[in-house]
Amino acid sequence: MGKIRRGGYLFLSWIGDHGHHVHVYRDGKQVLKWDLDENKAIKGKSNKRLLKIIGKLQKEKLL
Image (cartoon, rainbow, N blue to C red; front, top):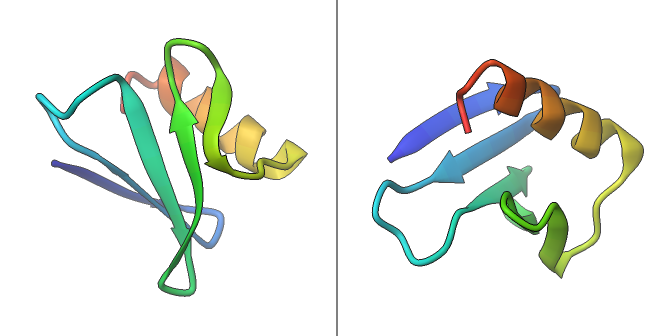
């Protein structure tokens, strides 16, 4: 399991989990489930700030 905190969000991903996605939490509540292969929301809504953070984490090879 990968656990990363950035910009007030918690990003969780599991190796071997179904599909390539990340769960995003804020204040203990899931705000987004993001498909990393398709670059689209599976559940919840994204915003520019979240997309920027996800992009940086992908460039850093953390997601």
